[in-house]
Length: 255
Length: 295
Image (tube, rainbow over all chains, first blue to last red; front, side, top):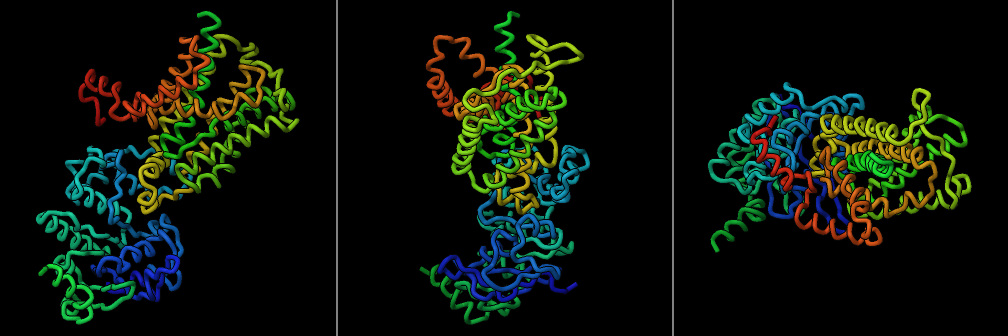
């Protein structure tokens, strides 16, 4: 169960002279929820973009399931079973909620020149799509235009798409932000369910309470460097983390 | 119907075919193209050359014409589709001017004189003209509409819709942006090739000016007016913009001014086109046919 699924090894990323990530190392094991936390600008989303193939790293290696994936294009990383959501939601706005999920269901066919000509309007696809929507609690809205949904529902729609693609690993980029209290509770239960079904979860989270409660382990980034890694309890007591992140936040809250 | 009406109707149906092709690129895949007339021209020129120099019949040449046009579409699409939006618009305009210049300045393509003496299309031993040719065009338009309809139902079409809406989200779902943009481009240019072949055999004398940049603007106007990404929008757009200059004969000299005005009004009041999402026509339909939606 606990073998390494994703390994980020000594990965750096520069944007011109800006060092966004500086020799980052961490691993995601299958069957765990790993939280990536850190103050704004720490490089968390850059890290996601490297893993999901949006752009290549400047140095270092990324291994997924024993295969080197740095420099692999986004659509090919997806094909390996890695799904992701976006910090700024990216729905296919003019398509319906169900169609959004069906786009993700097409992943098995997009590489095959013959299969792309077959129809996506089949009953079985529809049912599978609806089942996925039920899982994230959007089945009632299946025929609604995605562009008309409020943020909370869009975050769940993105998770539904990511789950359809990400059979082995899903990357959730601040999926809790902008959600109401009960939505947060529902989403926590959903993410635990995802892990228990055998899909590893790597998530970026700003809400410390959620991250501490939900994640099995945490990796803390600050200014492009990894400053700590460990269980939520260990992280809570880590001085560097408190200094770099929690400490500053506490001071901010007090003021 | 008198000959004049049939001529206009035939030209409109040929334009409708070409505009359906453009709709695949612009409406379905969301890739702006202001150079579609170039591919219309490549279709027409290859049909004309195959008929006059190689002596092939329309039917024998047609597959070659479509494949040639689609292949050139693929070659030109490969570099162009790496840029987006405004840059893609500029690039496709460039393609249009280059292709037009090649037709105009290379003697093989007839130069400024164009290519004349293109034979009529023969069907079951009879030479098609007038109404017969019009029906042939309608037949091909129907085939193209069926192809477009099928495209919207295929996984490839769905992938194109996703790309149109958000490229990075689509890529995160296994859709290769380059591959599917090219797919739409090739399908769209192949359809333009078909339209070009019909045009060459109908007009029977073609020259570079028939496929110049203003024609591309006209084609794009037809898509926008009818409704981008809808099945019938291109047909309606071609019908309206094809018929209007005839209906308002005195306006002909001001045609482009008129198009511009029409486009501005459309963008202001019906941004999705006449048949687009939330348009007046759509709303009237949904009032007349309550709850026929959601299949």
